[in-house]
Image (spheres, rainbow, N blue to C red):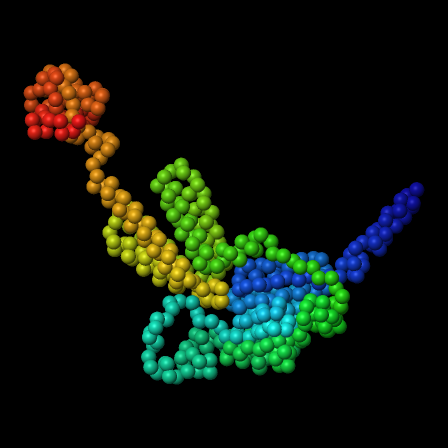
Length: 459
């Protein structure tokens, strides 16, 4: 009986192994496609990372990385390259659709893929590193005539050591990727130093890509049988006729792509700061505090994912603080200083800028104008309230008319605003006399006779 049970269990395991979907490579062989459309940033990095994880979990044959990008952040680009190089699943880079391009950061990513292809009517290149973040140059603000005349091979003013370092580092990166994948490293360097670009057919002739494909079916057919290096091991692709499954970005990646725009992050921070301020000034409103807190956290989270300059962020927050103080204590100086600090900080916010990640002067200027306007409006209301007569409290009692109800020895009771008050006076008065309040202390009114010229002045 025991032997029969063991045999039954063994047979069950064998059947499971034979008929399991994982036991047949043909039943699970699939090509997963992920599209990077737009600027390369933290959202793109997260999207590719998740796609590669899914591909590794499901044992996909290849991942098709479809690119249509103007470039983006260097930090995000390097993370994506590292993910591709470490991927256990081969990655086919494919510049598509027709009319698309893989410019700047997209060129480096295409060089990193195991197989590189382009659709007809696409282009790549222009991989020169962009200018480091900081204050924008003003018209006519070049260093001197000599710097204008002396130019290096890239067309920039000679002697720019920082840009030389960045350019040389980019050249070393694209050459190392070209050597790893057996592609044209000389043209890669030309794309970095001279911002050269190529069409699909020209890229094929220059051995920058492996082939030109009109669609994913042709792409998989042409990639079939190629030998690629995956994790230090040779792997022969078997991609002909594979079904293609598109991996759509989730809601979090879509949200990330929106909030990591530095202009959106700045607006979120402003909404957050003012929402919290309105909540403090009007306790119990709830909505401004909740919305402000959510926006502030989202803005700070987005900035944390971007290569920001913390000095620029500190200047922006200092400018907002100055404007808030200006609203409650108008001095003009703090208001102007707050606007200047906010604008200066916004120009310094990003350490490096790429296509799709520039801080817009229109956004920062409008934000600073609105902030200054709110501060001035609040200051105007506060100043008007300070100059107006008191309407509540003891100060509001001064000058009000009253009637003597009873009086004895310099003290008695008066009727003021329909209420009975204790009162005292420095002059003789009698019940029924009309008086006015001159002061109030410890709930005792000080009154005096109303002369003829003031009788009826405040009724």
